[in-house]
Length: 394
Image (cartoon, rainbow, N blue to C red; front, side, top):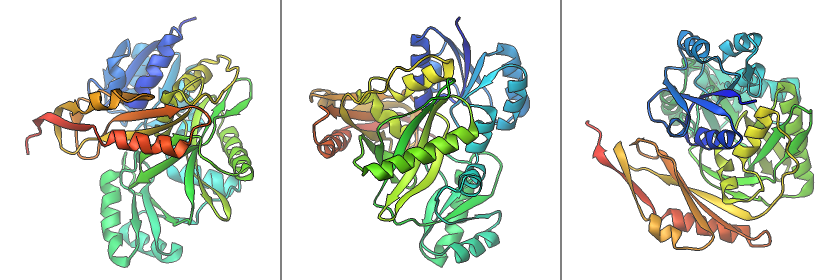
């Protein structure tokens, strides 16, 4: 039976999910805070609201009567999800999962305190003075993040006392929602970090994709590659931790579980209850099913026979460098003339400095050097530039 899905947040990840859901025969209403967001361009219907307004959220849910609600962003009145579940609407992965994972405090305390997973030392701060105290306790260098944010917004590293006030201001400017509280984390000495895409199903089975390596700048992903090379013991520990935290949160869907890998083992970092930006590498055909196809199947309760490694692949982002509207891309032809290459332009209607506007995908056989594929993706991304055809008025 065809389901009506309400997607809350309509960015590039949501766009790929909409396409995957429609290919399975389902109907999507895409919601965002601005019109013509990427997922709205491919959905059957759209709504434009402030998702932090609980009354507006209630209004469109009552209007459309969706069978399933799929959150794609953090800035949502997720406490309303409990009521929607009581109404018989399925919330993905679950109302509890959405509430916990949209707030770094809830998910960190669940992981570190309730489940005993290994994490960086951390403190919370509601004010600048509390931040100064937290930094003193945690030590420098340390990382500060808003409790609610995305794509690294508001995140910075404090290396000296004079960085504290700037970090506080940056966190407040980059936060999503109305919470001023931040988390202060000790800096973990890690060799690399990974995303472990984890699929939970109605059957109770949990599946894992091969680990994805990624590089971030200012908390925002710049490139990713699959598979990331790591020893088997560390991978099994990542899988154990991912299974524990997703089981505690409940529900079905794809999760992006992030880990730091150091000389002394594995540290749990963060968790997203939806497709992960680093997982866009799966669009290069690294698996038989992309992360978006896996999410759609899990959300709809459809079987997943297997997750098979089919290629080595890498992704590298295309960033804007100016603020404006009607973006124009150059260099696409130079990329696509190269073999084993693809590109995704997200369709965002306006630009701002460092906004992610597209992604380059490179791939090769399963026995190819993944680092060579990664270098190729980065080199090709450097050929592409994006500029607005109309600059924003200052």
